[in-house]
Figure 1 (tube, rainbow, N blue to C red):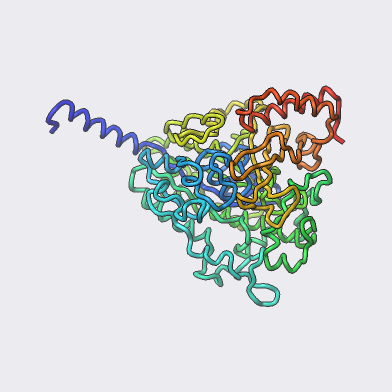
Figure 2 (cartoon, rainbow, N blue to C red):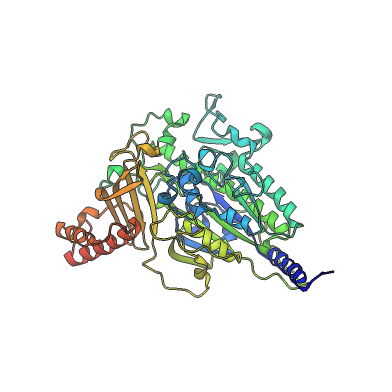
Length: 564
């Protein structure tokens, strides 16, 4: 019994809080590695991705979502802290943001502070120094993060070559039964994720489970049967396989990590622009698509387990990727650039409907779809959003969907450690009513370079070697990029030190192949810079570039200049 009224109220309040916590929605956060929008639900007619497409058919699909830097550690840290790379100050793999920049709260850490059990399986944070060799445990996770044991073989000589010996190849389709443990990393990760889901099914308290798949990241060590889905004679080259004539050298990604693989080294390709032989290009594209289908099957296994355990009706599912991957477009491979193919990512939110009334029958939400069982899969994608959005928006959006308080917007130029977000809550985009495309919505990406011309380490320069930072604004109609002088000691960008510029008119040039930045008459460009002199130095690079794009397009209209 309660001794006093005051104590009775405390007991009641604690009970109400406990009930409220139990009624909260769970979160299953799925992130793929190096996955571009090569999915059926994004209009790719080659790929076979039935499980992700099924998820998309019951979800809100953002067609124009972009990463903030097209490389693993900076992108994942940015997305999970909802801070841009210029705030986390992580442009490579060699620092931990809490020490190097600020003690910024992460998405899982926030959920943990609100009573959620938070768990990490596979590659969620980038492992190593970038997450303090602990995947940010115990800040972000209730228990230590899980990594599949078979991943230790990923960079070893596991690929059987034509000579019968094992190599560290780029193309590495294998007989899984012959691999150590008879398994592969993403298979192991699903096994562990399902085990964790089973422990939560009867617990009652809310959970935040993050599952990071390693594929389609290179090497393409995947089950060999997935190649059958993509006969080599049916594969095609990229529609724009040549380096654009007017691409600034600083913008080019020389795909050094690809060159280091044993099978690619044998091709003796010249640096930096030498093209990969066309027959090998086709094989790379075949293996990438096969890796996507393999990863899709693991997503299907995970979602069907969520469904079978009765958790789908109360679990928000988020599916995304850390960045894209070039498949020969612009003569480039891998990520490491500001182009759409490197920054454009899938972003899907499944928000469960109200559970069926007592005694009602509820159809299976995510039945596993076997990609080998039939040749075609048709899923109707209805809830699509075309507005441009950013991965820094994931944190506030998931918080809102789960019923938590949405973090306040960060000041425009700020390193403050208090909880805030550089992203927008996207939940307002979920309304089924078709909305007019917001042409003013933009995404910002950036990429560092050590020099104005391609170097051996241009793909991933260490912080101390960064001399140029490419800031890229992507709107629905344009991609506008400026390559600006950068001081790695002070983390300061010199907005008046312009090394190169890019401007792509996406209506006529969706592949970003024709850079028209230099097509403006000199007086038009000078008019833009005169206007920009009045902008205070405290204004962020992002706001400054918005104004520059407005001035550039205005100058184009006034001068009547046209793209060649």
